Image 1 (cartoon, one colour):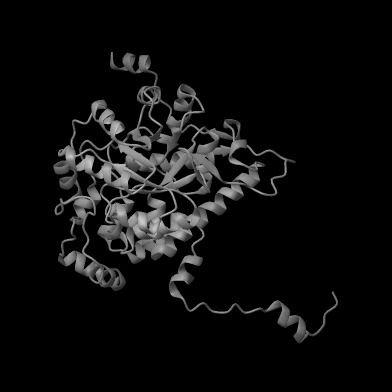
Image 2: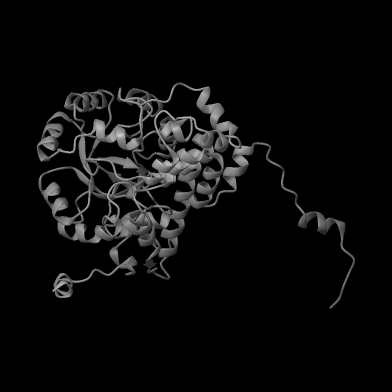
Length: 418
């Protein structure tokens, strides 16, 4: 091998030093390449009670674990020699456009995670051209979210209260503000057993204990934001104080029925979606009954633990209601490939909850922007590698759901019992 002394000119070309970025927030967000990376940053920067409220689920958190595992247990089947030089991720859902096949799901207590709260989510959604959903338990008003996202798509998620007039008033306010879709949520008649919250003594407003003070010491930025911004309270409800379970059980009505759905439908001028569907017969009844769409969801695993996995339920529902029906799915989405797989199996749209909140806790509005950018790049890359240029080209043949949990046949179970 012939050797030579290094030439200074060649060394200069090889050794390009990156200019340091003095913006600490931008630096840590740029280093996040996945939603899991954002989650790790969020955990470092957020007090345990607020982080665990977001990260946790009900009881043993089996539903959440299974939902995420279901997306990992996917096998893609790419087409070869089928160029997809440019990928179009845009879609139409519920009569309006979205630049990508996902929107931001409704989340409660959002300003507790990071002071910008729903303002950051709505602003990021507006910039990205995707829908933003405000929760009944949101910490920013219906009108203020509209002000942040005046020309984008705003959806409102409704719980039915014991005092029906409160719910009716929220419906009227959302309609007056120009929200285009109402998401009627049916999976929360009572609160699930969110054990992390109980162990952390989580409440609204936060209660100081020796444990929370010690936990806050390495996170002064969170407390600075919390103490120097408007009081944390529900923007749409007057009820505050107590644990999450106490608030839900005191305010929500466990007797909600199809009669309530009919009343809300008569009041609402826009699109009506039912969120929290967890079996095929309910999906069929709702679609045949004329609702504009359904969301297959077990509330992120935060209600009934060991509930059906929405992604597993998706193909069965689509077969029964038809691919033209607006079937959406949430729970467990942590990667753009999860969204692509859902669309391939018939979902018209998906919703992200925790993924959005991890970004919010990691860096406020910029963190939500980063969440959306990560998912966008993963969707585009997955589609290109599958050989599809648009969402319409995705088909069930592109995806196999690998079986990890195989149901026992009912007759076999009965023989065992006998």
